[in-house]
Image 1 (tube, rainbow, N blue to C red):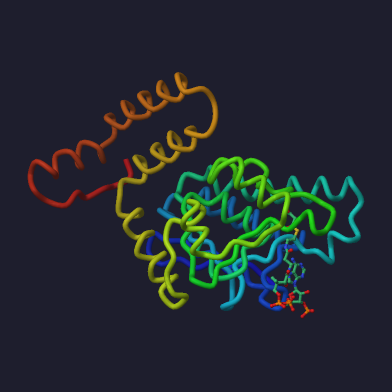
Image 2 (image 1 turned 45 degrees about the vertical axis):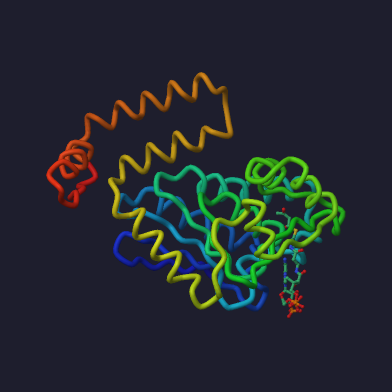
Length: 257
Ligand code: CAA
């Protein structure tokens, strides 16, 4: 049971590796996950993060149900806060995050996928929020992110019924951006991650920050922040290089400054 982190150029690939429990996130695994996410968020060489699960059956089958069965309300609160912290790191870290959903993404697994900026799915992907089947409710962000990603009615339907959603429906509902056969999932994720990582990191970071605000705060402030971030980018070498490269009909050489 572990979290595996590897780097390919400017792409970080984080794999939840507990296939014997379909990559369910125990407290110990979540703590390891949090420390890897903190390290990645501080690593300026990372231009994009891909999150996936080990094996061919599951992305993350949620929180660890056996462990939850023994938790007191106070322990459950700490577990919720730890899961939320991991989800928030995925959502707010400077580098874009891609969930490569290679099978079951249930409960907390769906919640980690929802916290990523972009979701790519294999054809065997299955999303769902089955918490009510256990007499509990989502605790790692789905009560907010599912509605914001899809629609309030669809989110309530899934959260109240526990119904599972296959890849084609996830795509139709905007839960997934692309669906591909399982062998093509990581190549597709790497292709997209490489495109993102080839851009100026500072422009991507500001674009992510501004776009994240689309679902929070008031519109007038968000437009002002967008204009602020847009104008700040004009002080960077990358913007000068990117704009000049277009007029000189060549590829830009971004330095992250
Ligand atoms: N926690 C702990 N163990 C889990 C698990 C989980 N979430 N999901 C699967 N496992 C374990 C199973 O207990 C089983 O272990 P054993 O071999 O030791 O019995 C192993 O993984 C393989 O699972 P199955 O035999 O059940 O595999 P399957 O192919 O028959 O079914 C499945 C796959 C439909 C995903 C099924 O395992 C399942 O329904 N799992 C539970 C998924 C779930 O409901 N997750 C949400 C948890 S609640 C939550 O996440 C709260 C929150 O918001 C934070």
